[in-house]
Amino acid sequence: MGEFTDLAEREVKEYIEEYISIVSNGLLDDGRASDDINEYGSGEAYYAEYILDRDYQPREAVELIEELSNDEETDESTWSGVKGIRGILSAIASRTYGNRFLRLFGEKIEEINSIDVDFAKEEVIEELTNEDGYETESPSFDQEKWEEENDKRIISALRDRIEERIREIIA
Image (cartoon, rainbow, N blue to C red; front, side):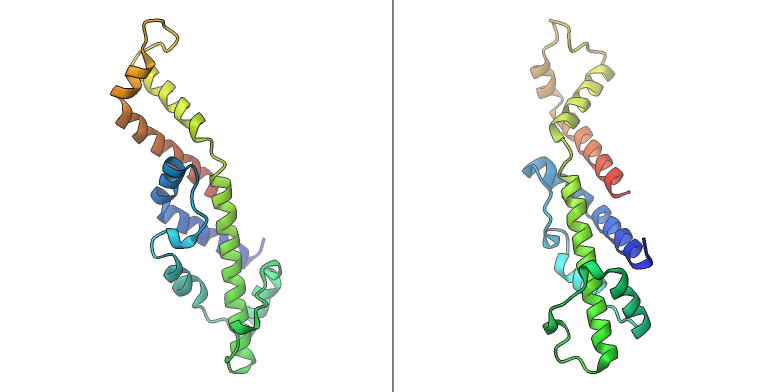
């Protein structure tokens, strides 16, 4: 991979890490995390200010466009009104990088959405019941009652488990 790809991957990781609680809440509450960057914090403002608002020197712009050619910006309105080749190259590079960031963000969210929340919940319940010294196979064990009594504990441990899995994905 190249310098700009590595940078985009690092920035996507940092962005998801920054909003990991919102990502995990989406999985737990809605069954999926949103792939719309606007759902996370300042979303579009962050994207505009920290991802798109970058100036590239001509050589750097050409290197970026070449490396990220699969995400190259082709919408001419992006550089409409921009003066000079340096400005145009910088605008194309900036949007190309932004396209790569959004694509990688979407891919990571898609991967995060593949987390099996039900399986994670089963794991958590098994671990917590074992921790409490219960044998879930015992006929005297009332799992439904135990889950009711430990609902907040289960949710907290499940949230931690989901965030752990998210961190594994973005690592």
